[in-house]
Amino acid sequence: MKTWTILRTFAIWFLMAACAQTDFAGDSGQGIRSGKKIPPGTPGTPGTPGTPGTNGNPNNPVITTDDGGKIEVVETTLNIVSNSDHAKFKNCVNAKLTNLPTEPSKELGCNRDAPYGSARSRGSVKMKVQTNVCNVMSISFTSQSAAGGPVNTLSTSSTSSRFRISRLGPNSFKITANDNTDDDWNDLNLDVTGDGSFKFTIEGQGGCQ
Image 1 (cartoon, one colour):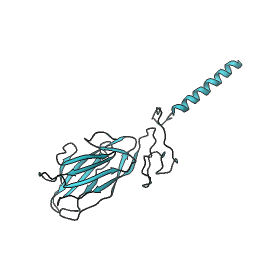
Image 2: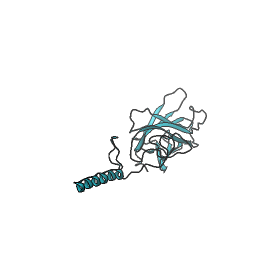
Image 3: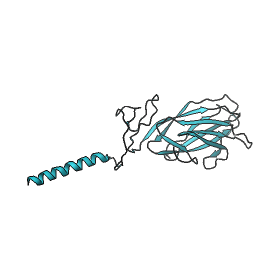
Image 4: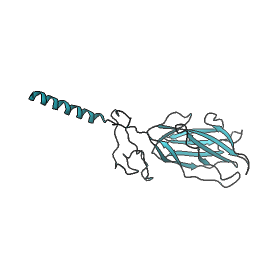
């Protein structure tokens, strides 16, 4: 009887140790995390590694989601650089995430405030994204040729005849556009870069890096 008690105690201890090593996700629905690690940090403190789903400190732009794979919707920042362009029309790029279809489209940037108006320089755009996924951004290019006139959508990600996209690096892209039928692709010139708290790509430009 004593030998059986010792064996049963050893078996329970072995099972507990095995569960601890596999990093069970409990009742979260994530399943076993297959060796995923939670980055170090202070739980509950925005902007520190290890804090699931938050990045409230712009001076510490790190991915602060649980490395185990929890998917949450969070608000983050896209940094926009408006480079010089040649156009007098008001040209803009708008974006919508295909993985968050209910979220409204966001204006990423325009070259000027109004047709033939002052040049515009925009520093950042707030946007809701998903953590631990590759966010896919669908974009559209619009142009307004006269004050009070119609705003025309000239091209979208699926018909990108009026803009060109190049990848500058992970989560960073350059967008240039042509607002008429000439060969000038500098009628809009924007650099769009994530703040490091999420991964994204632009539709038609391959996956996230």
